[in-house]
Length: 495
Image 1 (cartoon, one colour):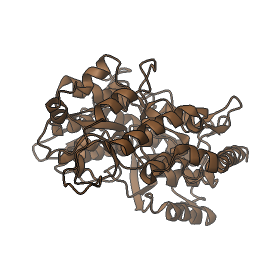
Image 2 (cartoon, rainbow, N blue to C red):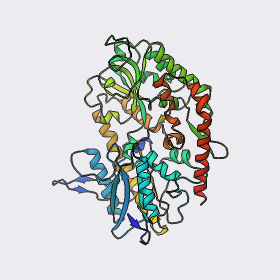
Image 3 (spheres, rainbow, N blue to C red):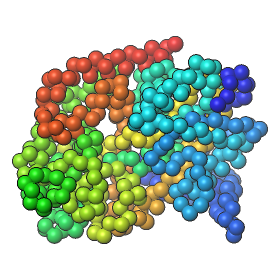
Image 4 (cartoon, one colour):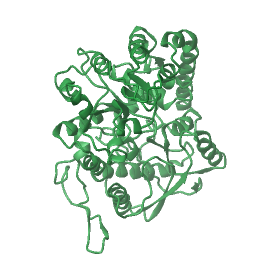
């Protein structure tokens, strides 16, 4: 952390996510390798707008920050992302090399300070940033769990990334940036954080459905891949498949983790089905203000929730639980989880499995929508960062984003594929489709400020209550909170 008096140009390069197909097979700009002694080489390949494999380079000029230390306040993320050691883990090694590449290109030293910032420590993270701000201190970059960063933004602690001044190296048109999160969270030209290929957590945190291919085949049920191929992977198809799969394995007359189900997922995962049916939570109206989406509080969401609840209550084919062992133990046909589950948790599974996006509402829906789960990293710049350091901060983030676009993302994707038992072309295509259709929802990011409306569908399913009761009883309070958030963010931008 640095005192405001220090007059060194800062580079905050906000990083954003590209779920484009090229992002997952992009190659390193640096031509990284290890020599016989295991030392990391980050030699730069010269020339051209694209690297030798056809992937875009960034447009940063030659910059030399004279060994300046760029400070980053980061968090206890679920997966490696910040400061790592070089060793036997391929993903960690890719992160390590991308960090070194940035340090060499810009002649800087990245200094990561890790602090608690996960879902249980959002208040502590904000307090740490607030105390620094009030004391005239800052980090060049803050990087934390979605809700921790969002709480800082709503508290007026972050700069508007849409108005950083002339010395700003962020280029949000580049494929390593997520336009979606900017579009979803901006008010006017004001937005306060971004994410992208820099976040290894983000790449692994897109909701999808893993399925037990052997179970479905034994039941003479057509592969979900075929349904996707024929544009028949819909909510009705999922419901039809799941029907009658339930089996009271332990014969205790209660649906529990010992039984077999058609569909299982955590309460916080089930809303991904609503999103998959093109039902966002919060959107922007014609005036650019946040409002609760009409479909979310209207008949469409009601119909979807009634269908899911009917399956759960009538034949117990769906179950609310976050125990991955239900899937790995072969006790459910479908499990709602993150795309990175294949990389992190399924390497010991003995049966054939695959993954598909959450289903469409019906066959007339043109796109799939794959919700990004909250434990990803959002990057921002403290509001009191001196203007003379904005260049350094934005250059650092832009460089780090573009390097990870080429050096880290493809390694994560390829490593994931190595761990999957199903290495078919179809599996590869589905993982690409899921990432290509990933999207953010403002209400998931600003969960605290919107009264946790993002979790309420799952809560209703878990409790066995109807969505209509929630909408009729609580939606007015949520709408007021969403309006207040919009007003707050706009007022911060005008200060």
